[in-house]
Image 1 (tube, rainbow, N blue to C red):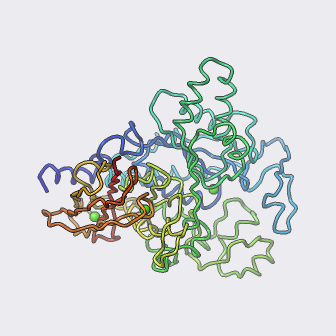
Image 2: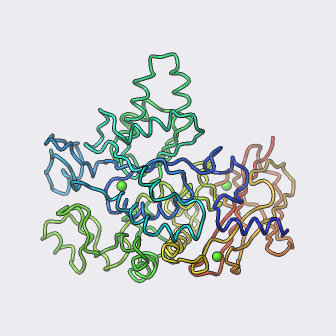
Image 3: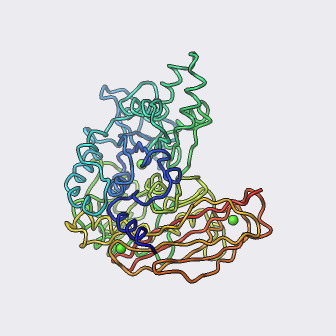
Length: 509
Ligand SMILES: [Ca+2]
Ligand SMILES: [Ca+2]
Ligand SMILES: [Ca+2]
């Protein structure tokens, strides 16, 4: 490793994109960081997702944190107007509750404001550990209210929909990532306003093309039907990435790998999350005594020591079996932003690439079985370790008091055009800003690449802090097929942290 490279490695400790390669390999395209508008409803797991997001906010150009509605949370208009959508939870579980004036939404709800207020408390520590964290004032200025009044209502503009409309129409380069862990009504309303204004004007062809290319929706499902009902029909050119996964949600216990079950336990969660500073205290866990909306019959998570039957006798709809006090509940919507993190996996490039947020498609699990869960569960343990480290950043006033991600870089281009029969040398550059020991590996992400076979990765002696391999492009690789190779580097800090660099070889014609 040369002195210049070593310097780059050290710089990377304080600036997330200081050593991040060429611009088009970054999630923000021509922008330094991805432009992001984040939408959440007041579900306890959105609150948890928001905690995690804010700890990675140094890697995003956050344009909006938007209160949003969904089929399970809407605020009402404050005028007593009744609302009801067929098939929702208030008509299931033997219930027949609505039409209602609001649903599972506390008057004056401010969970996003609360999370940003906590961010302000830990910001002085966070910024010691990485560059690029936005100031609390800046984040506070990015909080908007979207189309929250009614489930799936796109009948009028809101501050949130105005924000999305302006971001999609402005002259800054995209993509603009519309990340929603709620419904899509705020996005749908923004798009409808654009269409209503321009559809019958000479600019329409240009504007509809621009918006369709600029917006990327990453959503956990279609939580209010506005994708099916409006966006997909009227804006078919907008890329919609379905980010729903079992791994991060209420069903995580049924989906994680056996060795990762500890990350859902009360013991691990208490030591690594709940006891760690104000964000840890804010993070929702089983039996924490909290409730998002007082009296919400679907939110029994704050109780501890009660059986399902006891909770039912109290009037609760028990839709997730009670767990030990202090253990993981859910972070269901976390997958919407995880592939945008600058961890080297470049999961943002294409929905099929995969990363900590999962992947469109199935991965072959350790038993050789194709599994949609495995595409996300394979990363869960390392992502949780990284979360634990970032929480430590919030309480560590000095850089030396916490661990930081190791460096995983590759000399030369990360996207290469190759020929059949060619031998490609890949020089991995490894290091660690804490001067931790690192271990590294090169592996083929065969599920994510389009070449159907496996390649042989041969180790080659390299210099210090180098991991060099040679890969011969197989003779049966067809033109256009890709081979994904991942350099993976793990440090021996506490908690142990992992970084990656993905190299994509594309076979030439
Ligand atoms: Ca949600
Ligand atoms: Ca380290
Ligand atoms: Ca493959």
